[in-house]
Image (tube, rainbow, N blue to C red):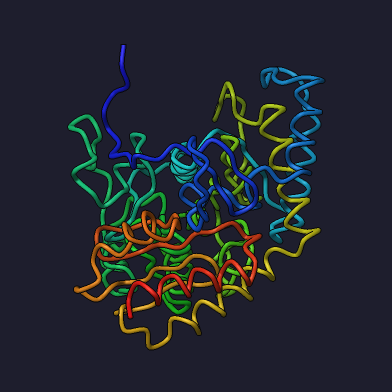
Length: 374
């Protein structure tokens, strides 16, 4: 048997990590400014994280959701306090796609409606409902029905209202910042307008904070920069620093019924322990403040850079759109300077480092960048 060949892989195999540093199987050292798609929020192998998981594994690794699990209740309480949604309920699952899938289901149960408004360039996952709300036909199989999905341009409130006015919408789903698209932000005016439209037309506002949440933008959730309040928030990636987990934060106006949602592995003992350790580290090391500080440094450092056509993003969720002559710079950063970065197509480099990134590491990246682009 061999692996199903669906990923284009770099010829690099990391085998060890510490904070923002990785080592491959040959001992070559790299600096990680991508964190495996924004997953590594508190650095590789943080001692508190390793200790917490090791101790939990020595006690109990798993039991199903048929029994009490106080770690789930602790996580709900801690997460509510950290993000300011203390009166919301938390449903735990295994991934971002699954979080969005359940959010859409909750909205449909609550409203009794079937349609969903999403936005151009959106990415919400690869499971059936989530991929239908993703603006990429290449990853939608014939099985993934899009008949109940409408798409509107980002930041075009008139277009959104024309769609919603047709009726039958259970939800509007929008990313806090579009990540896979190349770091595109909804404006505060647009988010507040959507909030009003959802109230007007009787649908729920779902904000997908899977990539943009957990302090990455300098606030716990990206939409909190604008003071808007969602009915449902989805989160995953940075939530447990690499241990699979997802969460759906649900407004108190939405009531649960037994059997409405379910999961085998979601909220298991190890996942909750990992997520609690991440909250400990974020709070104790003031990592949201660090994301603000280092994000401002990057913004200043890249201002006027001749290789950068446009700088987009907030905090440590950064998109660097390249001028045409610098397409291919990501490969050079990796193989010549040993920096892992992400991409959104060939023309945009995404920076999604751990929130623990130091000023010295940020400066070393800018130095390497300028050495390759001068």
